[in-house]
Amino acid sequence: MSRLFTLPNELIIEILLILDIIDILKWRQICKYSNETVINNLRLKYKIKLAFHNMLDNPASNLTTDERIRRLSAYGNMWTHAHEKDYHELDIGGDGVWELSRGVIAQAKGPRSMVCVQLPSLIRQSEEKRWELPNVGIDIAEFTMDPEQDLLVLIESSPEYYYVHLRTLTRGEAHPLACKSATLERYKSVNFIYLNVKVTGDFVAVGFLPDSWMCKEELAIWNWKTGNVHLNVKGDFVYAYSFLSLDQVIVAAGETRLSGLQVISLSTSSQSASLTVEDMAKIEYDYFLRFPEISDIQHVWHVDIRSDPLPSIHSTSAPFFVDTDKRMFLLTVSDPHYGVYDSLSILISGEQLLKAINNTTVESQRDIRWKDWGLTGCFFSSILEGHDHTWLCNVYGTRLINLWDPGLPEFYILDCSKYGHPSLDTDISSEEDNNRERMFEGLAHANSPGLSFTQHGPLAVSGKLGVCDAVMMSEDNIVFVDSRESITKFYTMSL
Image (cartoon, rainbow, N blue to C red; front, side, top):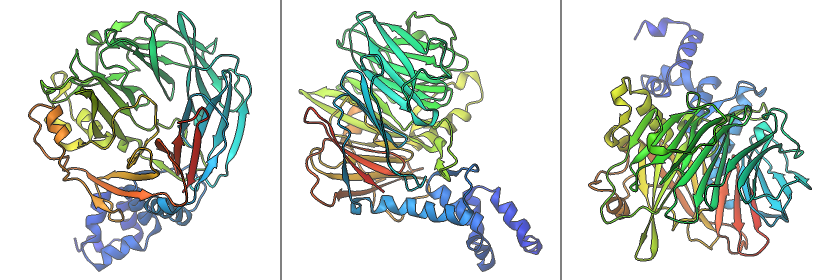
């Protein structure tokens, strides 16, 4: 070790910059000199702050390291003091379906119009911007969007087909990168009451929830640039899915009883124009992440998987962005219990999930047992009251936001990090949850020891915000929703 200290300081810093964050923290503890090496170097300080906030640097940004540190510190502080911020009503004036994605909130207005608002951003140093698409030419049944690709995905419902229209978000025109017709189609095999639409990179996915429990749920995934169908399946739980990476999807799987999550590679799956719906049980998967056995007294009624969408393009205006490998996935399992829907929420660490997958080296290990991934990467809690099919952007990166008491303007933030969050209020990693043991057979372990989950709140919103029935968040905004009336009201808090 003494020989190491004879190296030039500049060389020591370059060595430290390529080390893992844990190694850098250990280096700081060796002696006064090693500690000063870190705290007196802006690049090392920035690397540590990025790790603690689960962020990655954006090399495309033209900001100095000093300015990046200041913005990152402000970003961390704004979540701690979120309840102290002022809010204002966002006058969208829409009356249809709505969504928040990547700092843009949009809502249908009448059958064929849309209103979009780019929320102000501290990180990007951008102001609020509003625009309207007066006539998109179709009746909007559902939609999603990817502002970074200027992509608007509109779903049109006809008696026999769903049509997926690929437009630009800024102008409502056919997207120049879309397949030839800028329209995808899906045959309506049964009557579906809910659509779960997501977009990541080159892929657009739609989950279909039927109006009868006797019918199977369905999932279709296209490459929106080529028009090829990469997945077209039916199963008991396939409405619940999320993109794990730009070419991998995780799908809830099981025959009648939920058994786990299947990881399917879209780059090697079927690439055709076929509209034949295959049974999920016959699909070739890459990995199967097994759950414990469902208890005999439980009947899983529905499953949802939520996470923030993967970024496709990193704008030069953002000096840092969420480390997508560390995103949290919120899995909600619901069952009817004496006429009331009990929900168990499972927060899954994307980092631990990917680690379990990457550690499988042979064909026989594609089925990953619960003890090899769930014990180190999951946290159980009844944090969500009941179950709602309305899509809510309440998971962003490693944070989850939720109303403390539905109807009241009080909320809490749940944050995850393997390094801990000393600035937040309450460590809940040892919380016991009876629902967990009632839902899964023989599940008596404590929540994941490899992760630190911290709860900040309940926090009461300052001012006189009235009743709200949902709360969402994006990069640096919190949005409260009141959908009780015909015109949905949105109240935004710019952090």
